[in-house]
Length: 334
Image 1 (tube, rainbow, N blue to C red):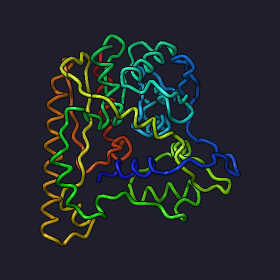
Image 2 (spheres, rainbow, N blue to C red):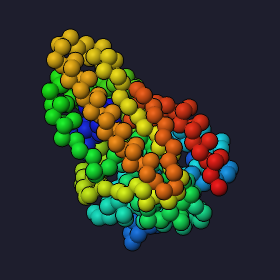
Image 3 (cartoon, rainbow, N blue to C red):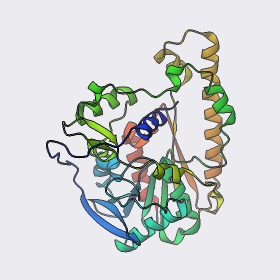
């Protein structure tokens, strides 16, 4: 199971607890927070990190808020004006019972663009936010000037049957997500360090504090987002005709560690399991190549950046590469 799926599995299974802590923690990120009404009774949290030049709007992956971009966005703001939208259901945004289809989520984004008077921004999305990007590029190309996919080319036309069958043969230690002990949840700083050790990703602490409640003793509590929210976002037929995307595309594609590294990290000696690891890797690479072919058909053109051995959170694990390529992409837009 991939790193991001391990963490997602953990956060979806935890239960909600108290959100009040003994001390008030201050978010160190240099952003301005505002709220934009996008639907009847629905307000979205919008972060503004400032910067000069073309507007760039960040959309988080499933289970996260715009604060996951805190550190990354500050560096991007050196070359553009950076905003982030926390979609409905998460963080400080409203949590209505409906409106989680990709069409409605894209309409939420457009409402934010209008409220902030953003003229044809570039939109950068991580993971499942790729669905919103595709909606914007196919149906609202006149409202955006470019799309940047952050390991976000998953599509409903993907066939996971062979991959799932092979992964079922892997040892439980490679399939089950790691679980933090009570000591690992003693505080958000300790929890952050545990995630760094297990996921090798430096999640901003502000993100963790929005994803989880805080117990009276300062320890990490349960997931704050109701389970129906991610379930509703993931449901539906998410298939797209990428050839209809009429704006330029930049797509970052992450790949897991090569089989030899996985074998070494998991101390695998069984030849059969080693072969399975290699087969899983091969199937994953093949699926990724198919995704690349689909996005390369975009009418507006697409530039692909392969990131081998990257985390699913490519904007954190390969930050310098992502910033460099993004700056070049922005500079080349009309």
